[in-house]
Length: 91
View (cartoon, rainbow, N blue to C red):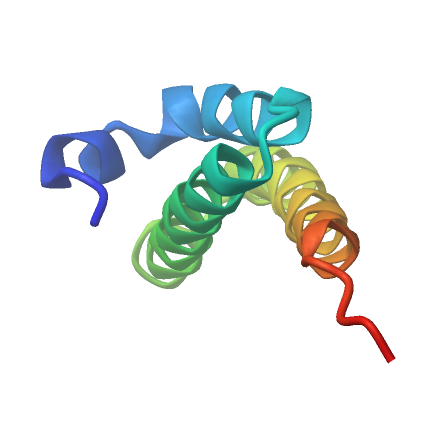
């Protein structure tokens, strides 16, 4: 479980969690870091969505659009990393 203060400050730190997750070599640690990064990225995505509903402006929409694209790409990369870091089952 990610600490609430980390999620609240996710605008600044989701990229740090993402980088830590993709850089980790230990499979066990990587799984935990991926889960934390995904949680924070989803929280940030929800925050941007809420902000776009309640505080619409052209400048914010452009900035948020760029960040949403980066969030989508990060979630995709984490899903691929998670898929390929699973232990192989012997046939």
